[in-house]
Length: 175
Image (cartoon, rainbow, N blue to C red; front, top):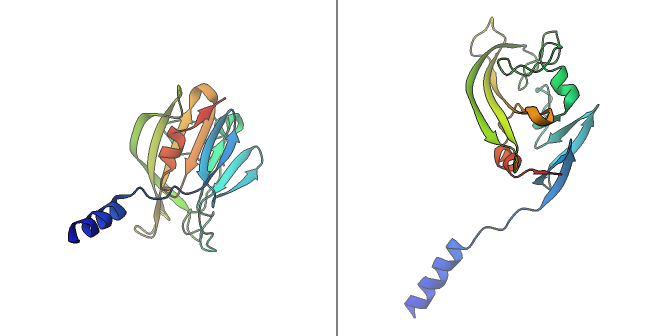
């Protein structure tokens, strides 16, 4: 009697976890599957995918941006996207993402690599560590992750290290 009970318990512990429901988001010729609990908001010609809570202290909700040709054209101080600089489309001072009472400051590139962005497409992935309020070290910082698909003029900008986002983008389907 002990053996069947132990086997049943073992199978219950190793059974695959239920897959969370997803929904499709189509943008600039590709479709990604995102968790159904995430929300999509149009921002001009771009899309913002809200992935979590919105804090009154933060400059933006937990989210990532899907940007097309216009986002690429104005991604760096009002000029075209440059992989050697963080995504910063305005020419002015920007708020620190996690704590908007501070301004974004010094950016340090942490990583650059090539990665799959769906079948047949490659993205240049760059990760930046951005400090806030340079006059007061250690106040706050955040990570900016950027996927750039040059052939399709697509940018994905994530300021929250969104869990699972890299896997979602690897599984993109181009139409």
